[in-house]
Every structure is written in C-alpha cells, then in structure tokens.
Length: 289
Image (cartoon, rainbow, N blue to C red; front, side):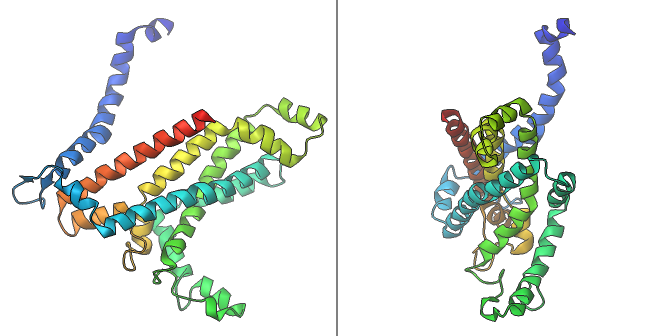
C-alpha cells in the first residue's frame, strides 16, 4: 500500500476517472456557459457573437439587480439567523439532553424531504383563506395581522425565507453537533473543575474548537442562498412584481421562457463568480480569526 501511495503515476491513474467525470459534469459546463454568455442566441437560430454586451446589459437590468440584492439579503439572514439558531440547538443537544436522539432526528427530517413537498406545505400554511398562519392569528384576535403572505410585495421575501430556515436548520445543527461531540471530554472536565458554567464552557471551549465547522456551514449557507432556486420557484416563481426574484429564477425565466440563452448564461456566470468570491472572503475571514 505504501509503495502505491508513493507512486505518482499510480495515483494519477486511480484519480483520472474521477477527475474526468468531474471535468465533464462541472468544469466543462462552466466554460460552455461562458461561451454562450458571449452570444446573442435563442437556442435555434444562428449564433451572433456580441462579446461582453450581455454583461453590460445585465447590470442595467433592474430586475436582475433586485434579484441580486434579494439573494444577498437571504445570504445575510442565513448566516446571522439560521446558523445561530442551529448552533444553539447543537450546543443544547450536545449537553447530554434527555431524548437528544429523537430531537436530532426530528430536526433533520426537513433536510431529507423533497423541496417541492416543502414548498407545497408552506403554501398551505400561508394560504390567505384557510392557511394555518392566518387561522392562528384570527384565533388570537389579531385579524389585522392576517394578509396574503406570498402575494404581498412587502412580506413575500420574508415569508419565503422562513421555509429555508426550517428546511436547513437541522442540517447545520447536525454538523455543529458532530463537531461539538468530537471535542475531548477532558477539556470540559477541566473547565468544570475551574468553575466554568455551561454558557462559559460553550463560549470559551466549544465554539472556538468548532470554528472549522462554523466556516464550512457559513460557506454552505451563503453559497446555498446565492444559488437558491427550487423553493422560491415553487412558492412564488419570483413574484409578486419580482419581490422574491433571485438570480437563478430570473436566469431560468430568460433561458427557458424568453429563449435568451446568451443573456441567461451571463447570469449563470455571475452566480458562479459570486459564489467563488464569497467563498474566498469567508475563508480569509476565518483564517484571520
């Protein structure tokens, strides 16, 4: 085994199939999308090379700019709302809470559920006539608070964000829980002997030692928000009046409904660059910490 691991040719032979598959599925489509982004093309007629004109038009498109802002807002909320809740749940469950196995399973169930199913479920919750949310508000005497949550331009984005928290909070919670449980019990024992309380143990021992997992979850949360598509598509399809539009839904609309393959491909490239940029920024932020 050691002889094989020290043989660079053997390593190259064994990794070549995986790299070839990755190249065909991931890398090659990115270059093809970039090529399409330089064209004016409807997918059928002749391709017209227009250079970077699609990108110039992109940043004059008020719908795309609004979708970009919406995705950044969702990324911010994911990091500063979703992750703290997931971290608190993980720290509580890691503290030997009775029934922690049941709670871990219950919190993780939404992660394995179909996104379309989740979208349909929350559409029923938000339904203006018989939805659970408005029914509860009516029962509490808060009729003035009831509204068409997904049909109101002022509330649609926030209403769409709630299912995102609900779906992925268990995922991040499980990552934090696994990282916390990997910490040596000796450190906790030493802290308790020194008189540290549960909150101080979490702040000074657990959280600093699970920073690598915090970094991973932050990257997942930000990148997931920037390329979010399916849940928004099911809930609102970007409406009303583009209030919940995100770059991926606007890209889908341009490519598959307006047949602007070049213009839509330029949005795909912007999404990729945006994800890479924030990944590097988060890496450097945690590295400096």
